Length: 417
Length: 91
Image (tube, each protein chain N blue to C red):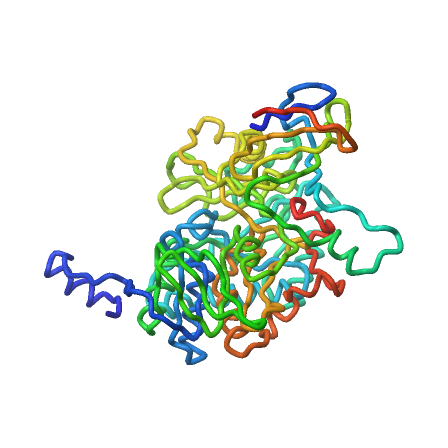
C-alpha cells in the first residue's frame, strides 16, 4: 500500500489496527539469482536498485539479526559530501543527490534534514586547508562556503567563540546541503520498497559458510539451511574480513570500535551539525532533543561493540570546549559499533578474484551517508559484472597497483584514517 | 579499560601505551618481490578472537611489547618484549 495522507486517514477509521507489515518475511527459496549478505542500509539499497533498475527480482537479503540492527542503527546519521579527492567527491555527491529525493523515491519518510555541516577551523593552517578543500568541492560541483568568525557565531550562537578558548575558532567550512536523516527509516524504507518489488528479506538467517566450486560461488550455508545463489554480494560492515574469508579472500582491512553517545533530551540548542577542528569530535541534535556526539576510534582492533572510557572522556572534553553548557547535561546512552577500516580510509566496492562474488565494505566510519550511492553502484557492479564509473576507483586491486585514495594522507594505518 | 602487564614496568593502564597493530606480519627482506611487500604493508587477517599485536609503552619504559589479546573479550593472555621471552599476563 502506498503511504499517503489518504491511507493514514483510512487506517484511522479502523483505529490503525489493519496496517500490513511493511515488508514480507518469506521462507527462503532454494535458489536466487543474487543473494546479498547483510541487511543493513547498504545491502537493502543494493537489493532495491537491483530490482528497480536492473530487472533482477529473484533476490534475497540474508541478515543474521534484524534489518538495520547493525551499524545502520549505530551511526550518528551524518550526511555530507565535503571531500577533497575527486573519486570520493563525485561518489558522495551522487549519494547526497539520491538522499535529496529518497523519501519520494521510496514513498517512506527518511526524515532527511539538510541543516548544514559546519567544520570549525582553529588555526591559520587549518583555515587554508579547509578553504582548499572547499575550493576543490566547488570545482567538483559541490556546494561549499567559508564562514568567518562572525558568520560562525551567528549560525551557532551557543558555540564558544571567544579568544580565551584553548583553541579559538577562526572560522568554518560550511556545506549547507549536508545534514542528518533518520537511520532506522532508511533501512525500513529500502526494505519495504525492495519487498514490494519481490525481494525476499530473510532475517535471523546468518551466513555460516560460502560454498565454492571451480572459482565460483554456488551458494551459502546459512542458519536456515543451504541457499543457492547465481551471484553473491556482501555488505556486512565490521565483519567484512570474516565473510570475505569464507570465500577465501583476504582484505586490507582492520576492524576497530567507534563509540558514540547521546545526552538527555533538551530544548533546541543547535540546528546544524558542527565538527570540532582541534580534536576529533562532532555533534548534532536529534528531533527528540538529544545531543548526538561522536569522536575517535579506540585505536586497537576490536569486535566487541563496546568501548573504553578514555576515548569517551576525550570526546566529551571536546564537546565542553565547544559548548560549555554541556558539562551540566547527563549522558543518556552510549554504544560502540565495529568499523571495517581500510588501509587508505576509502571503501571497497568491487569485483573479486572469485568470479561471481562481490564486496561492498571498508566503510571506515563514513558508511551511513553513502547508503543510497553504495547500493546504486553495487547493484550496477553485480548486475553488469563491471564497476559503475563512480566506484571504478574503489576497486580491491587499487592497493596493489598503488592507486590508494587516501583522503587524509595518513598512509597505510587503519586506525589513523 | 585494558590492563596491560608491561614485562618491565608491571600492570599499567592501556592509555600509557601506543597501539602498534598486527604483530603476525613480518617485514620482508630488502630485495623481496613486490607482492611480499604488498602483503606486509596492506593485507591483514583481522581475526575475531586471539590477535597478536604490538604496543609501545610510550609513557613508561618506551619498550615495544608483543601482546596476545582477544578482540572480542579483550582478555590478554600473553605479554612479552617484542623481541623475546613470553611472560604470563592477565588471565
